Image (cartoon, rainbow, N blue to C red; front, side, top):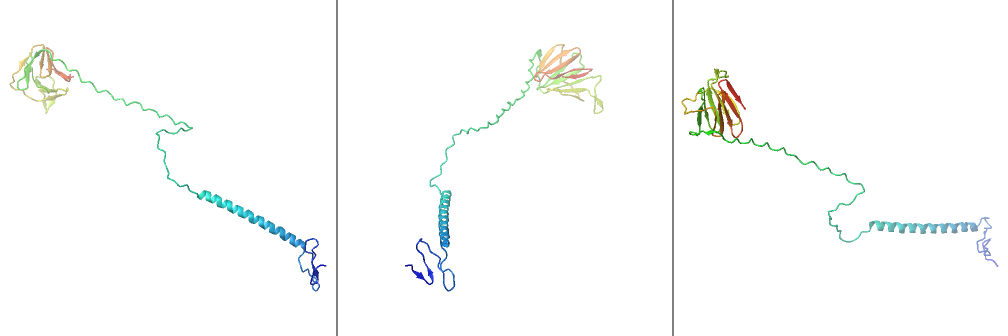
Length: 227
């Protein structure tokens, strides 16, 4: 015998709900069996989605935990070895600048050895005059000053110069002057030495050469030539 509910019948023969009909309204009291089959499939699908979402959540948490994890300890630094690492691209070689060259300093002029008769100074000066008596000079270690009856001297302060001055480095200047009464030694036509100067007396003129610098002049009544 089958249990009855209202005017409908529940059929358990196939393990499923059979459709029951309300006699008064002619409507189904229970939904058809296909509805329950579809509902069960939907529930299983929801369960699978929940399981997948749960697995994805666990995986995301694991990834975040791995990114935020820290290692305890003290940071250490490897001491420098002083050796540069090798690189695949070679560095350009550095060109060595040429050594600086220093120009050699000019060698000093050779000192001329005194020659001839040595004239003794008086109070730091030596006084001489040529054999003709037309030229008189006084010498010290720094310069030579002479006066002569020049035939073609330049003018100084509007008058013909009657004197010339020679420095040890070869500078010559025309002057106006008068040596006065000096104790001059008359030179013969030969070579003398006095206070670092060499004196070469000749008929054509008298040459004074500084033994340290090699500079000097040749003087005569015709003029002066310096060197």
